[in-house]
Length: 396
Image 1 (cartoon, one colour):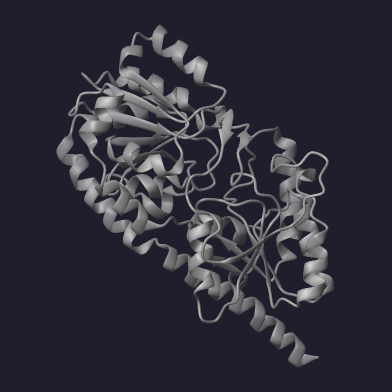
Image 2 (cartoon, one colour):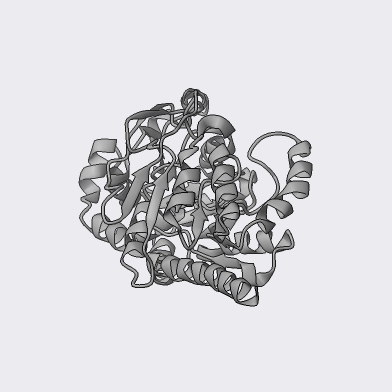
């Protein structure tokens, strides 16, 4: 499995895959970004994840020869040793999580093709529209993506929206497999149960019973944190508070806007919160709001639901169709519609009994969106890819 860098959400999946009786898994990391203290341009601060990233599975750091290393641009991951690994070690299949936007993806793909090794592409894409850039990118993607994904024996995607998108590119149903984007459900539920909500709110300077909305993401334009602040003002819920967990380039603008709107005394900025600190953030809030205009999945939805924090997400969040049934397991609203979001804030923050029902339903929903479901999908994808190889060899 070729990965761009260690991701706190993928490590538990790799551990589970390593225990599967049919698999012998080896993870090749193109960089250790996130495992070593590195400045994250999105958060604007130095980040090093504080949960185990490498325990329980075999892994290798592949030397990155890029003159400007990092997962921010195409040549930031340049790992020619991948080619030698694939030629030397006779793998039965290669799963490429790196994505076509990196040079190392193409190194792995060409090495696998020349070695007649079936390759599986992983992508979280749900639409052609890019995070930034003009319509020309949509045109280029429409032209190139079908050709790129046809190079894979199987494509794995983490959401139902992703399955539909890949199928829309002309990839057959038998070559697309859902591998749900999951977290370690057990860990999140256990950690949230240990939280002293009153103590956390005491540190925040928020009364224990005050209705509280939460934004938990990088403070970047496409996450639309200003939408939430403006909706919070319009909702005008008495004694309600708004908490921002995260950092980024819009922090100063958000602080100024809160002062202009006269709500700065009821808005809290926690800064970057590492993984081990997130359960108390979710558990001490009432409603997580994710207003993003670009969010292929949005795993904070999983985390919040497991910590009994109700979620309101925009209709551009990929997790929505799979995890949120409006009014039952959470709320959905049109991206950019501040009035619709304000209405949800009023409905949710003024109705503790409604939130209590949704918390229970959301937690029940998460029982069938687990790492086990991800592993089942991954094994199915690998089996299909390898079966197709055996069929081709038999035919020859």
